[in-house]
Image (tube, rainbow, N blue to C red; front, side, top):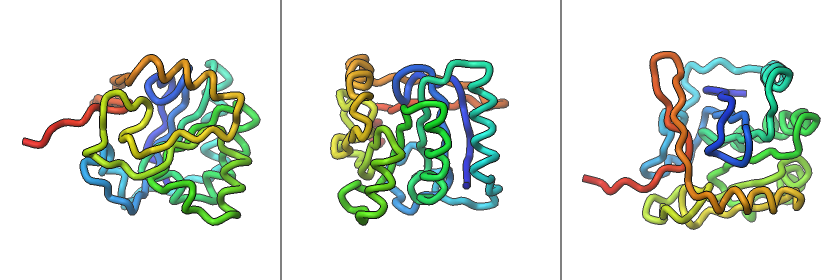
Length: 188
């Protein structure tokens, strides 16, 4: 898998203390994307799903991991790897949230079934800058859907959504990374 970064604990991309995994690679190229640096795989090193899973296991040994969030890039552009990873992660938590720029309805039936079986919550649809409203929580734009495949997570997420958008700033080396769903900035 092509992964740019893994950060824990993140509170701004789903309920609880989460491990957030940013994948590399996205062909959508949405206008005003918050992570255009993740569009191209470039010279990124491909890591095995087992290696990445071991990183999460190590985090979980010393910390409480309430959920996993995949964002990017578009995680589902590495479909087979994400499903394999999710199958392993289900041993640690049933709260696996995945963002994708594709609509769930457009996947073929085989992919839909694999998503339903292995992902707890899916946020689907491309980011549309003009539909970025601050009352649209956990999503970048109003066209995106929150789909609960694990119905047991709905109540937990609905409580979380009532808190509104959150931003969390994290130091990575000498850079500050702003994590969360940002409000639309008007173009100058």
